Length: 189
Image (cartoon, rainbow, N blue to C red; front, side):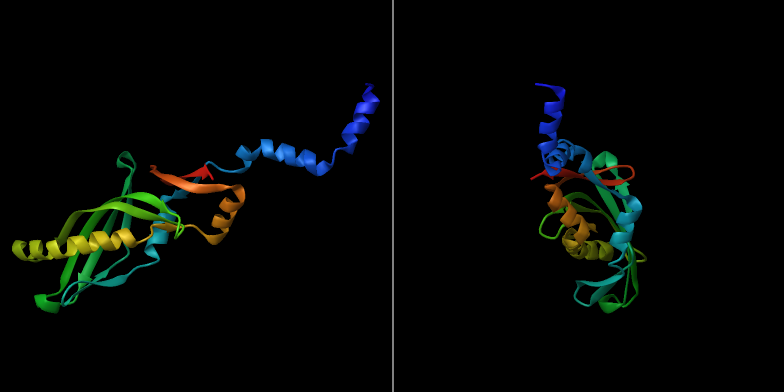
């Protein structure tokens, strides 16, 4: 076959087919391997839902201020410090305290969000309460706080990101906590 004849045959191949084949070979370049969310964006996303008011027991309402998030990459967890204050209620005194929780993270496909898993209240302290009363409140508050924190999304994917991932044929997978934020692995469908 002469070089001139092979050039003419190649010219008949539709341009779209050539581009499609080239793009198929380059999909790993076009689709990222993960979604990286920096700590500041996690803090901002979490803070948008605060302050909030929650009842921890009959007659005791607590206001929870914007939490402070801390990364724990060595444990594959994050820590969340919650500052609480409340009215007098049954205690006949103002209530103020701090709760520190830690949790792992998992992606929830139904809500397209990063959710806490294995939530543990590491520390719960109320200022100025006798130790016996603090322990009683802690017994009431601990399961409520763990359940409530487990229901709060840490980060929600934007609709345009969800659409892009669907178009690329990938879904969010395991989440790693890094020194700079979190990394959500992207897996082929």
